[in-house]
Length: 147
Image 1 (tube, rainbow, N blue to C red):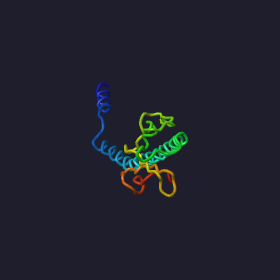
Image 2 (cartoon, rainbow, N blue to C red):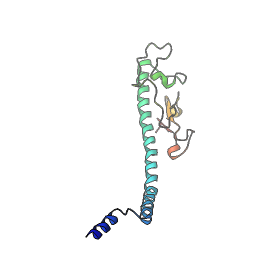
Image 3 (cartoon, helix red, strand yellow):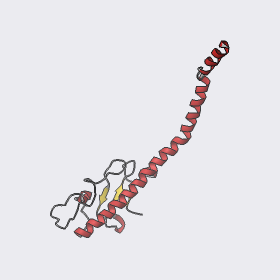
Image 4 (cartoon, one colour):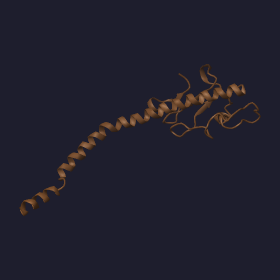
């Protein structure tokens, strides 16, 4: 009986063989290869959607400032007019943002602001996308208040 119990104990403590470990690693590699690109794509889309929402919120806030002041901020005043009174503007009733500063896009760059906007828009508010350069496609495309 002591021989059987010692064999059983050795078998229980044996661990994994090298082949078993290699099989598990191969399976993990396949899973990462299949799931990894999906996760990266999801993060890219999430940043794009976040940018769209931030631009919509900033554009609405610019409209509130225009109602108080009677005009949109100049390019010189920029989006900082949403958090700090522009010089010589007594009708400013801000700050118009809850935070003390203007948010940056998800790629940690400032939003671009142009007055007047193109195509008859009163202003253009946009992000240059992941690459930080005008134009582009996919995650690199510009995202703005135009539709």
